Image (cartoon, rainbow, N blue to C red):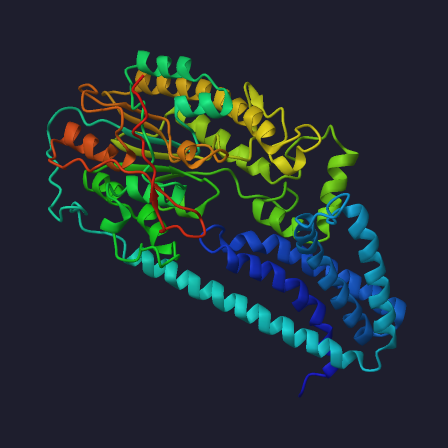
Length: 526
């Protein structure tokens, strides 16, 4: 039996509201996982179904109601995109992209749309057209997501599996029985800059923290640079002890596919080497799947969000791309004393970061040697910490313009607050590690790149501190992360890995493999 046409057209609004969710998932493969779209999709269907039932009851026509709701859904999900586009288009007095201007225009558009729908003689036909277009767009985005997922899986399969030096091609020989086997901590503080850069750019005197590290036996690489300018490339390099051009032929300036790089993090050579040494892997949820080693022996993550929990970052992006942006901004104005991150998507970031710090400080991972990989997404935004806990300024600049005239004013205060909090927590973590370790541990404390604001030289300057069993004589002021585990394996396991030239490759997210070398020649060891 054929399905009546009216039933098919009634699906139009459900298909229309499905497309933005599927599109956003497809656009962020590797950044978010598929379950992130389940809650917004279900809520979209529920509200659309309720609206469809109400309009059908009021009009007495499911077919006409389907067209009405479809058009309203299109307008709803396009508002945020139009707002952002117009915000960058200044008029003589003020940018056109303001709610006080755009909302009345949208009210008129909605009224005109209702008027037009009421005069359409064949609403079923137009609903069918919208349903078909939406279905094609959904299928296209789903196909993009599926193809990208296949490519991600293929890149993981092609990740290095042989325990050889990617640079020389020679086997990596790690000697056993050289002494007590140490736990190895690789703590990466995202966007944590170098002392001289923080002082120059943000007015932060970080020398007391570095002196505290030195008092605990650390050597500070006072002129350290990252090998690459953002997290994905930087961690892929440090965790494989090589530059990207030694790790494959896909990382050239005429390419922008970053998926193979992600696989170099989730299936890195360093992790394989420690696994071969009998180590257990400890890893943490970060909010970025490409740095989440979910197969770890111990994977630390807060509980999954429940139905009525705070917004996830994915949902926040979806909300701000729709007319929900009006509600979001109105909430910030009407309830200025509400928790700063209640609708910012920062709550889960706060929870996961606090859990990682607390877990590192507790340090009870069980018996056996362990490799602890902790990518802490801080002092990177969103800024959820103040000097003694919760942030005292908005976590994101778009909610801070009333308090801070410029983004740099906000960034200077918020970043400094994060650093003050992190410094205290990191020292407590280190004290506990040193107090509870059965043998002298390896601790690498690094930024993956420098502050997000500022110039390329600031972004290419990082905190870098080493504490190695037997002393830190091998650490020099300009040592970069590509050599971090080379000196660890040489010092602790008597390997013979050559140290590589320390180079800093700057590139942008849009052209990740189009590098320029940032010279560090003017840095002087403190």
